[in-house]
Length: 288
Image (tube, rainbow, N blue to C red):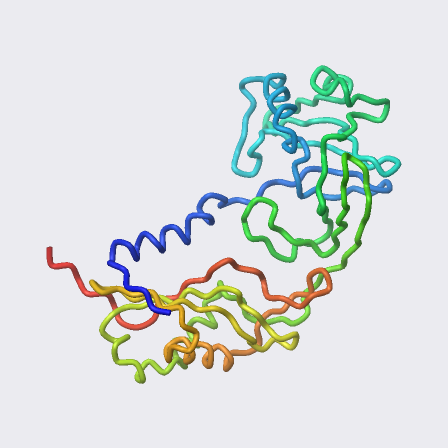
């Protein structure tokens, strides 16, 4: 499939594709949870699950509460699973020069209906996959809580109650290159048959790579590529049988090994939404 785009529209498309990364440039700091007496990093914010309760909490907390990219709420919740129920034990403000703590007794003013002897019962919270991790972080998207740990526990939650759990041990399966590294990009540019496509020598193009798949042994399997070309008749090509796209995939298959992870029992590269790589000559100068 081929679409023609004016240069300005092409630039706008690239901006939109990059926007999600700009919005979440920093990973959020995890909350804290105790399960079976052991501490984990909690990769969720149960306090944000109910908008009415969240508004009450904002009115209760100090107006000058600090926040940062890593602490978008300005505080960290501390939780515990007791008798297969989720309880909020305390909230700690994310402050550098002092430590302000609001324990369950203090938070009763906000969560009176959920207050118990064990803490604030999170009866408002339901989530199919409540993730928590510990050990080494294998990789991180720098997108909110998109980080993956060596060891993870995933709980199914229904109205604050644990209805299921899965325990995973993730690992690096094959050491190798990753999309964001320069080594494979240099090799790709050396091996890509640019001489077979003279039109690429006249105008710069960009390959947008996503849905990147690998074999468990570290060899490239497949991906989806979009070819964007600059110029007044700039075009976006998505036909996977296009000669340039087919050549790009053949070149990727010659590059080995790629880094493979075993995440939740499945072999996968580091998931990247979209990776862009320039290809071909420089765009023509605007004489205006």
